[in-house]
Image (spheres, rainbow, N blue to C red):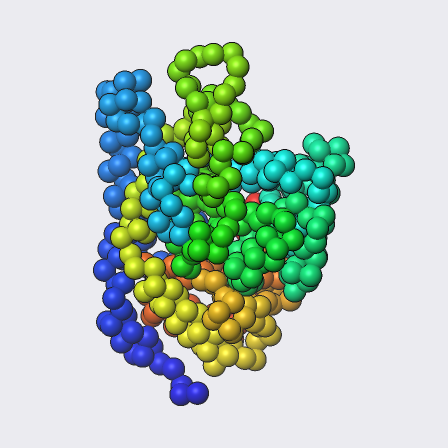
Length: 414
């Protein structure tokens, strides 16, 4: 392969059709941010929107803003926008609660749609909260359903006539490995099972087509590629064909057919609103809408093309510059099965290496026991950022800069 140079990367930036989006984000000067797969960057417009919501809608409008500022319809309004990013229809997505709460609601509802079946299927090493929530559901069901985990290469064969629900993360949080959504969904349906996809590392990063593949349910978060801010509310998808039968367990007043009738008995709303529970987190949902609006204005095919090119170039740079230093490639070189990140392994000093890199304002993250993650967010990441990141890594390794005490002290968040 031709030796790569920084000028090659700079030329790609000059030709990048997405380059203009970078100006919409408030990136700290002198920083390279490769962690948008964990927490997205602040959109500049979110600052003005936050002031508007807090100072005007809340401060001046007070409770009237549920009507005058249309707070009441935020879950559906923002949900319909997200629907366009994930291949769903209007009325199939709402913004509500957290990813974990939404997973519990939909998983519990899904197993009720498949009475007599006792198996929930997932993979070991799925994102921890997904497994924890499913374990909690298993306990609440008092053994009526059980969680089974099998290696990702065995998922298709493990789906059988006793499977009620398959729960998988479309793009794996550690490796970036991407499941064949269409094949798994089809296999589940052939066996009479349902599928719930976690799209937290997919939405805004890879093109999705939930309705085209016949997906049943999905959840996702708002603070990664959608740039909704820390703790932004999550979203959930329920295919229209399931909505009338769906009975979710957290039957709060926002999911009622007539919330302000204030009746004692619960009557679920007729459509996707029945998946709502409590009061909408208005400030968080309003800021999420800013990030979603930016994302929906981009061409997802261009986003994916840039993401894949960045991944291929990053891998090539790692092989070109970091060969002697003990790094292993965790992510696949096959673009068809790789999300918008590249993960490396360093068995001895992965955490310290990442801390040394962060000290240079080049921000990725570490996942135990030995994974260094680098996320590619095409709307604000430049090609030269990849060069500068690997160049810094090479220097950190050559000088053993990572071997400083302050880089080996564990932090609460890695």
